[in-house]
Amino acid sequence: MSKPSPTRTVTLAKRKQLRKLATAAAKHSYSPYSRFRVGAALLLSNGKIVTGCNVENCSYRLTSCAEQGAIARAVAEHGPGIRLRAVAVANLNHAASMPCGACRQTLTEFGDDSTLILYPGEKGTPEETTLGELLPHAFRLEFLESK
Image (tube, rainbow, N blue to C red; front, side, top):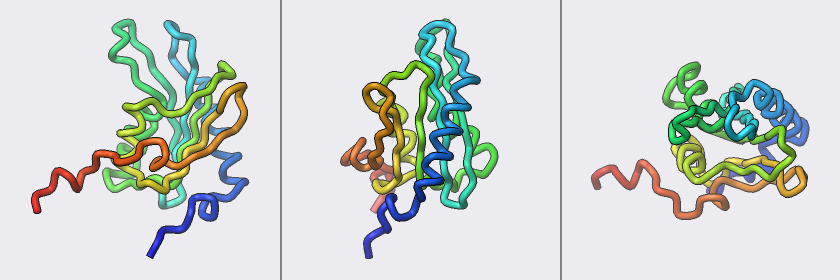
């Protein structure tokens, strides 16, 4: 049996709410180096919404993306069994901004191919896709389990 498409499981009103919350989270970004202020809002399978923002560090490699921050917060608040229905990413720079490669892999840990991804495209236009389209053939936990 196939899973319902994200288009049917996440209403237009909920998508707008997620985008708005991601933008609000971006306002809390700590980004003195890049000044690229990013926020994320996660819709969990239980209906709860959790937000996060990017936090930079003068040792650039230690910077935490908004999606990473939101995932850490969601696990801390709701436990390691969280599952993602949708993820919204926003930035205050009016630039295209979809999850980076590392964030795609982290989102895959808690989502599946049908997880809806909302992001600003070129010129800030609202775009959407699925996690499976962003990261086809993702490496998953079940590949580590012995048969």
